[in-house]
Image 1 (tube, rainbow, N blue to C red):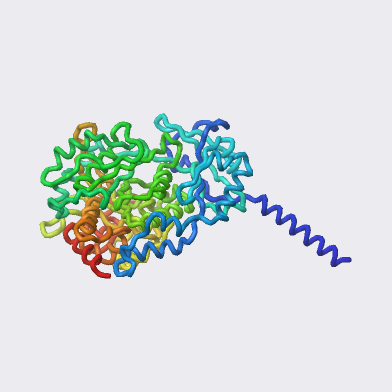
Image 2 (cartoon, rainbow, N blue to C red):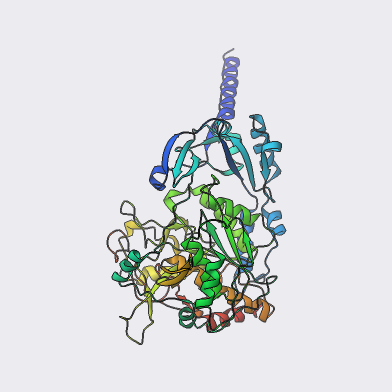
Length: 568
């Protein structure tokens, strides 16, 4: 009798546990603390239940280990698969979410009052599911309250604390977009007062296309102008547009001595607002350095479209059958303002882009090592192991004539990721820096085992631009990224159109193993950290977290690229 009672109790407990699990909910992301990470946005009241909202469900993808292996195989010189990039369809087939994941998410949504067939649509490979819902539906799905947030007249609906999904769905999702993250206000030096401040701090203001072409030994080198073979692009977000008349005037004034294009080949997205400094800078300098190479201007909204702009952009790239060979991006957020699941998923998207043969270059940030509560504050996506982060230099007349005329600039973003481990391709160089540097900051400020960035650098001060038909100036690693990107586009053009080779693709394995021979090493200059301008990291011989491996020298970089592409 006692045995029967024990069996009955065991069965009852099992039933209770089972029901508890079925009703359990799981957090996919930690709280995002919008007030802390997005101070430009002001929280208003609760969103209205019938307000429209868009949610993006990032379905978990398959074969991620195989994807990383394939990326490194096609990107590493000496590999039998080097340069044998995948097509969009091949990438999609490799990582497409399982049918079980699709079924679980659809069943959950259809079990509420959200109709997948009527309110939702998949991206091409079914890796993202976008659903147009009401605030009431979103709140019910995710068990969270949405508030209105305002900045510069724009409104966005976001939640201030964590959201949850049913336990039986959690293993099939990476995150849900449209709940946290907000775009930042773009700020760049662009007026006479800020110009005077920069000059007072010793920043040399003397960069324009001809001087950069001379500095990096580009000379009159240009691309073949064939859009079907080689394309470069800049990505822009949140009200950053360029004006075609500004680009025309810029090329009239600065485009002498080399063949160039004065119009972009294609605008993807909107470009109908006021000219922005960031967009004007990026398009003018990638087209001046990567001259006569068809260029796309890829704009993604976000502030007014009530979505995370970077997520919208990365989905669009994944959904495109053809993408540029080089994409320059001057965008970043502090790692601690983003969730780890979000960054890990974006990393997967970067791997997919790299496997298709595209070089992704990101500005490393303009806060030096960064600082928050006496800890350094690295910037993502620059810390991603699957992009090339571009730091900044400045010109210095203080150096003797036998030294380089460039040195690391104090605002050059760099350091070590607090999220991603050091990449294998940079292990030797980073270990050398850590073991030989005489000026390391207190180790409590950073994770020495993290992915080191930037990877390379270029001049980041004193850029002359045209905006609203008026000359102006800008500085920041946002200047360095399109400059370095344009030079990589020139290398690609010679590989593709001059020698019948494939593009470089994901750059880092090449740069750390061979490409450093085509870079000028920087051994002077320190970044700002938690204190004054010299409390971050300092440049030294070899790789460092201020200037990376160094600045480009086009002829030698091309020579190295041709050499490794000729060896199978």
